[in-house]
Length: 387
Image 1 (cartoon, rainbow, N blue to C red):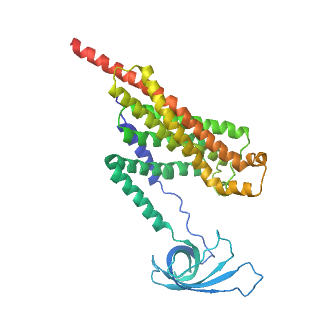
Image 2: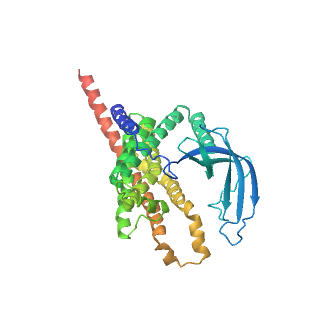
Image 3: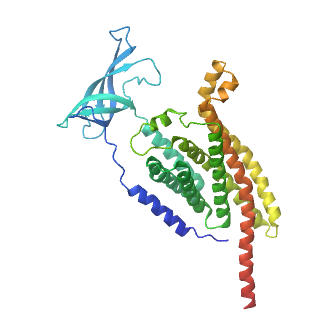
C-alpha cells in the first residue's frame, strides 16, 4: 500500500515556515535606568585579584577584582574592571580565573558608551556547539543517507517545537490538544522521511499517535485524580507571573508528558512496523494472524528495554532529591505523596503505559494495512489478466 506523503509534508512545512516567519515581540534588553540599557557581551578574563571582604560579618566570603577584555561586538577590544563577589554557594557563585571566557552584562549610556560591566555567566555555548557537531557528524558518517535524513527530520522537529508549539503555548492555547497536534506533525514528518511512502510508515505513525494519546489522557485523568498542581518546578512557578495570555501550567505538565514519551513511542512503533514488513517480505504467504503474532513478539522484546529507558530517563534527574529524602530518613508514605514525586511518577508510568499501548496497536495495524494493500494489488492484477 502506497501512501502519498508529499502533499502532507509540503503542507506541514508551510505551516512551520509561516510560524517561523512571524516576527516575535522582541523581549529587548533590561534597562538599568531611563537613560541606560543593558547589552549581552562576550569577554575574556585577563587578570584576577582575590581579597577578603572588609566586613567579616557580611554576606560575601570572597571578592574578586578582575580585568576583562570584550571579545565580540561593537566594543570588541575594550578592557574593563569589574567586581565579582562570592557567597560560598556552588550554584550561584561564578569564581573567575585568568583566561576564562564569560558572558557579561554591559551598561550603555545615552551616548552609546559602555560604562559598567557585570558577570552574567560562564560562556559554555561553544563547547555545546562542538558536542552537537560531533553528534551530527557521527549520525551522517554511520547512517549515511538515512543519517542525513535523520539530521533533517531532527531539525524539523526542533523547528516545530520552537517555532510552532512554544509560541502557541505562550499565546495561551490549550496545551494538551496543541501538543497532540504538534506530536502528530513531528511523527508524520519523521516517519514519512525515514520510512518512505509505505504502509509500514502509516502503521508506525498511527501507533505512535495512539501511544502518546494514551499517555496524555492517562496522565490527565490520573493527574486530576491525585490533584497534581503542575507547579512542582521553579520554572512552572515563574510562568504564573509572566505578562500576557495566562498559561495553563497544569495542562502544560500533561503536554510535557506527551512530548517526553514521543521519541520512545516512535522508536518502538517504527521497529515493530519495520519488523512486521520484513516478515511479510520474506514470507508473503504468511497469514495476518501469524504476522501480527510475529510483530507482537518483536514488540515485547523492544518494550522491555524501552520501558526501562523511559523510567530511568525520568528517575535520573531526581537522584539528588531521592538522596535528600534518604539522608533525612523520610517515611515512604510522606515521599510518595509529595507533589513533585507524584508528578514524576505519573510522568514516568503514563509515558511507559503509552509505549506499551503502542505495541499491540502498531502490530495489528501492520497486519491489517498489509492485507488492504494486498487486496488492492490483487484486484488490479485480476483486472489486467482479464483484459
